[in-house]
Image (cartoon, rainbow, N blue to C red):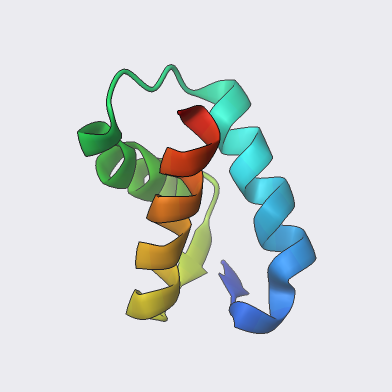
Length: 64
């Protein structure tokens, strides 16, 4: 299991790009579920709840 923290922003940015390419995101409401499933399937864990919420917002902004 790979643990990502706020210090790993280059890896997190790459992860977000891969997530957007690999998933067909239909609405902003589906981002949390799809992203958490993506993390689980790739054995990646982000323990910081504030960071994960920020990532949901970043993904939402990138797909808009």
